Image (tube, rainbow, N blue to C red; front, side, top):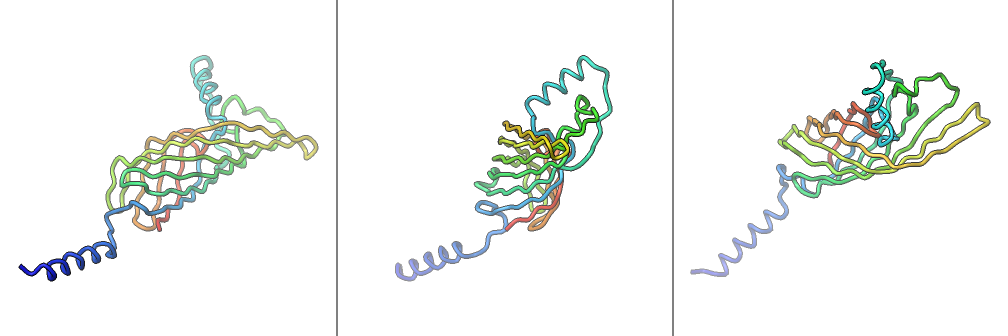
Length: 193
């Protein structure tokens, strides 16, 4: 048997496998998402309690959607089923959709949230992904009254989105359903590189 020829063939195959592109694998890839979310809440822990008690005690009230929370999210694929990353979310109108905060006050509010996130993929195929995301972070909420009085609140927050759907390969669109700093409904554009 000719061992030098066998070594050359094996070495050539290993080099070819190492440098050939693999399209089915996402491990090591990165993703950048830009999205808008409706009904976002920074005080996710406290607002969950307020909304639950309000639903039990009070009559149902209309929910008013006043604006979107804008987010930028980065993900790194650790494995085929797991991605980790982080988000920054700017909300120009926090606390406006919760029924208890419908009072007509003159305070102008805005908030900035920074959080770490973990995404677990339930179903993953080329051009279609079904996933869930959880995130934990902190927020800073700034309030001003006629530019004369200011207040800043800090706190912890979370996002739980058990239902997420992404369609597209390199560039795609996605929608998520959940609760927290990105909102109940969140969707936007996604780009993998």
